[in-house]
Image (cartoon, rainbow, N blue to C red; front, side, top):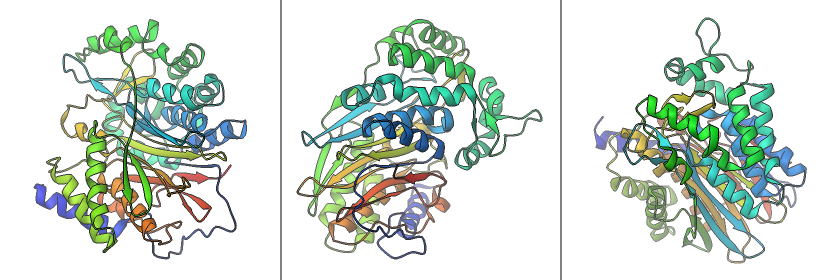
Amino acid sequence: MTKSMFTSRLLSGIAGATLLAGCSSDMSIKPEGPKQGAFLVGDEPYAVKAAATVMSQGGNAADAAAAMYFALSVTYPVSAGLGGGGICLVHDPKSGRNEEFVFLARSTASGGAFAVPGNARGIALMQTSYGALPWARAVSPAEGFASTGFPISHALAERLNASADVIRLDAGLSAEFLDESGHVKAAGSIVSNHDLADTLAAIRVEGSGALYHGAIGERIAAYSTAQGGTIQEGELSSYAAARTVPHAIRLGGENVILPDRGTGAGVFAATLFDNIARVVGGNTEAAVVEGTKMALSGFNVADLPNDLGSTGFAVTDVSGQAVACAVTMNGPFGSGHTAQGTGVTLAKAPSSGPAGLAAAFLTPVLATDSGGQLLLAGAGAGGPIGTASIADALARLSKGEIVTRRGKAGAAETALYDTVNAILCDNGNCTALPDAGASGLGIAP
């Protein structure tokens, strides 16, 4: 497919398939009375429920977001495995500060096929910086899922079926997700991963460093070397997540917080939002389409696979703390290689073809009004439509349009696993909106 054909198809999808639309819908959610407070939203329901449980036990948004990530690493490993990386944004209501945590999976010095994982390091840094509960509480739900088993959700089943060829080529993935006849297990089937449970237990007890040092790190490095991926033990042990100031822009009366321009995700999101900001007083849909087109032009995109192995989620709590995260494996199940004895499927090196673009479309976003009141906490992941949908919602909010309702879900026709999940607030009323074209969950615990 030529670049012009791809861009045309993509932009037509954006124009007709924005999730967070300002128009009415049969699926509209109409808040009744003030409901600002605790909300959670993500692509996989069991992980969202696990995070809600942690919040009900006294956790704040940072604790719940960490719990959701680790649960996703078990219940949605196609996009959120321990071998991947991502970006989180945090809004702290006490200080009014916004922070960004960058923990993208990195290419090795030798340029092998496997990436050095970042998720455990980054999520740990975020949770220990802002969480209210002990670290172990954030990891234990995931460990329980991996050890005792969990039912395959419809959200995971869809991704498994699409990734069947990848699963069949890996012993670890096959053992967990294929039945005796070699077919992908159906939704509702109970699966477990004892190697992954052991790894999560070590992370729970020793901290995130357990993945990067000692026996687990040695196994990952040894497996990588044996497979020609050449992740060195030193590259694992020296991995550090970055804690930085995110990029901030004004969009009408909104303060919009985006990933810093030091990452591809930051460059894409900032380019898109900056272009929208220039024409926000005009036609919103046209502004989003034109802004997306201009942002894509800088990435020389000729085509994208349906599945870049990414997911996004968001959490808010009653104190006003908000967290938005997006993570990726740089392709469904990343490299498709699970390090023996660890349960850790390694992400694909970001330099490997189209997988290198996955991180560019991770778009965690936070937005507040001029008084610091939260307007949006959300994340687009999997492709540019997710970013564009978030941008569309904010552009409409800045013009006073009502967006706390579902719009059309036709985005799936253009980019099947390009999703956006958001918590939207309007005059003190908040709603958690999972992508209407997916099988996720948004709840208020």
